[in-house]
Length: 334
Ligand code: SF4
Image (cartoon, rainbow, N blue to C red; front, top):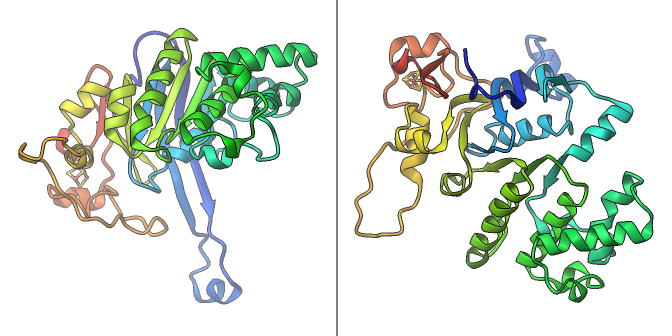
């Protein structure tokens, strides 16, 4: 089954899993049936990310999108599956190979107000990754940090170098966080809810900057967001996750304009429309996702799905290719 476009992918993810064991008290263990319980945060996810593409992962809190990103960044060890980067298996890197990988893959944190050390100046914060990786002498590090601050349009840079995080606005701080992520010259950037903590009035500026820099620097970028409108604005490909599974994947316009999975249809219907006179349509589902420890049998969405049929309660839907690059896991498309 195809999982991306025909160009050799930058990231190739197959059957990726991350299961977290549940800690239990002794009493709970004695009372239970002694079977270990797990939260299946990511449970068999497969996709390709073409080099230079911007990809979005969307879904409710707890769907596994952030864990998937952390697995790609090698911040957590997978329970199973493989991750190839440029055809090389990076699933279980350690030591110097892992350190070299970290120069290629960077994370832009969600909350700029907590991402920078309050005791470091902006210059010191942006230089920090260079220091950690032992790159350049003091003068070279300063020049690279200045260049990164110029790239994120914190200009004139001289105004910001000696400032401390509390002296910057949220938008300026997020630009400094982006500069710190870019200073190592990464090829892959994960932006986890990159503007959710920012004032609405400055979100577009930060998103436009990220979009321009992705093109200019040929970055491969993964956006994590619960906000489909943000992903539609920034991403070429979109994956929709539900309770650890990838339920739909495809070119963003295809996924948003012609969603095939009922959960995607509900997410699309929930996107706010700025015109109050425009009628709302689409699917509505109940608010509550199931307990992630006691997952429903069959399709994990079946207790919220308006189209549920008997087979959905017992048989897990396989991923089906509905058109080139567009995959859906739902019995309705089988
Ligand atoms: Fe709904 Fe069945 Fe499709 Fe699951 S498999 S989304 S329950 S129709």
